[in-house]
Image (cartoon, rainbow, N blue to C red; front, top):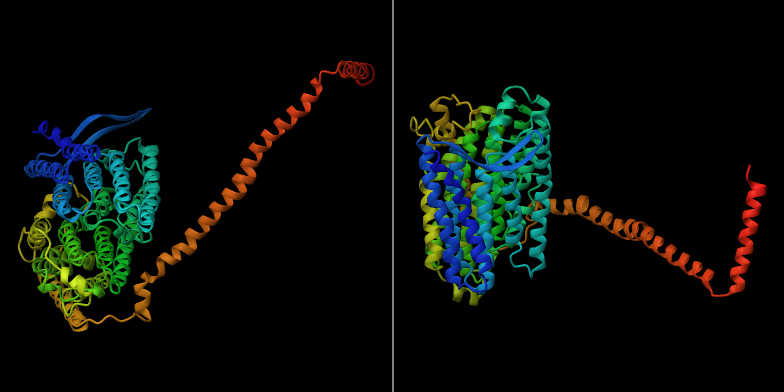
Length: 630
């Protein structure tokens, strides 16, 4: 059976083949053919992922070593895939949700011409390929290849409509901010190699357990890896690229925000749980950064009016909760929330795309309203996603968020209180979004109202599928207080997440915490209902204005980092490069030219001049020989 698992390479290879076919054939393949090929390759990867998952569930884990990738001195790094509980679970989520997004895209992007349609699907396939490489890698170098690849693909997809300069700026911002985190990731890899000559997961964790890495080494390495995660998974201070990533098509937003790129940081820390559990400093940094990010993003989402921007800041906030879970040692809870979040956040983004489609491209919720009667499937599925992310039982988000809150309570009641406040903000701003968009009277133009219609089946079927997953997806993580042995995901991941210790808390305490959070969340929903059921747009003032402008963080970064960097660039260009480097190079050239012109005078063709120079030379030689030599 282990030999059979060698074919795991087909899982990323199939999307790569789809990328090549749809990309190279974009001028020749019809849009329907392109959509079928792009979706079918991901579906085939999903089918293989299901097979691999079943093998792993049956106890067959395996490292497939294909060839030596790097061999320098004592360092040998193989190109190898690791098939275990964590990677197999992520394979299911990545390929499953990506397939649904591909199917949705066939209808959403139908207005693109043939060549651009092919370009879009080729980028989607390439994105899935690199994410699968990231998940499957058996060492940090292979992970880094996928890590960089999804960064490249995010740049290509965010700037897909490249004729819009603002979209290009958003793509540049995402690419540059990710490079900051990636640089820290690289330093961590070099540090590992310099200390233990390996970057393989098993070898690294064994070396750490054996004391071959000092406490300082482990802390520095884990903090550097975490900086890499803050870039990829949009945590403070490297989070501002993610909301701007809304410049890409809505299915791209769903792909980036739900199951692929932004979960890479969570995967990396969960995979490295042995290292992180050996450094209390790193654990505290991860937990506090995640919690602060969750609260900051939630407050910003309260006053956003772009339907995709609300969901974008929601993603940043939910990622913060995942990092909080990792920081308090609840690694399986963080991974569990990755899975449930993939379902309901993909659903919310695709439902938002359906709303935008119905509104002829309009994204401002202040110009919507009363859509629940016009686009019922979109409304019902959006409602399910909103209930799930708010943590209403028994939907998926309730179970994963409850597990995070419980683990946080055990770690620190103070952190729990702040995290619970963030959960209330989540419910409030999500139902604000729901009520403003779907309730009250329509606030758009007559032309928009006339064209409002439900999306085609290729868009609504994915919504229904994700809605079902958002309802039942949490049943794999039922709390022990409700059903003994119900937390199947924790038990499944236990062979990989070896540093997680089961919590011991009374069932009554757990029930009390669940009741408190549920009651307060319902209260937040009712407050949103009374405030926004008959919404009328008005200009924000005071703190609302600050939140609407995202705490002016972008302006702060622009002042502190962007403008000085640009000024330094201008100085280096105009002074150092043009006056300094170019001046020296051009000066040498001018000196040679001047010397040539002067030397040319010595060859004027005048015999008298030649005789004079000979006589002068003889006189000079005579003076040197008889008067200057000692």
